[in-house]
Image 1 (cartoon, rainbow, N blue to C red):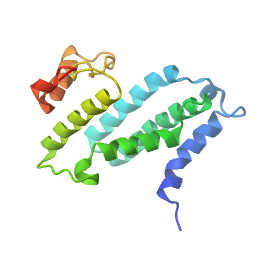
Image 2: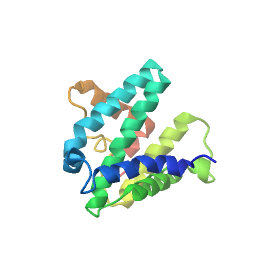
Image 3: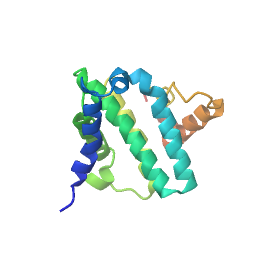
Image 4: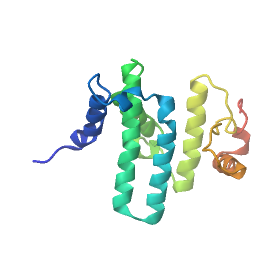
Length: 173
């Protein structure tokens, strides 16, 4: 019988662990979150290009390269005792369950727009529960890819604002 899904996904994490081992690859062992930053961005752009081209083989390759970046960052964090791949997977799974009450709970939604609106409201609730008073505007990432035109940040902000009620834009609302 073939490998399970978890065996297949685990393979890249095992390879990265070996690459960063004391007898592994000198280049891989030297990498940090900061030094890998440009590669993550590059691989993301290559994935976007593959998606735009409709080339599924290229898309699979580029998704693998993005997954490799995730594995590298997870391994670096695990080596420092901060978090690991299992923790990343569990945290994002829990977040997806929490943000999809229409699938995993008893909430009903009429359409995809309502899902997005609920998503933004849930993010605001989570932020407030964590003690943050950031508004929707303040949650737009400060760091955007180099060379991104100024309107890209505004476009992202307008999209977020459109998914929530205007009254919810303030931190205390």
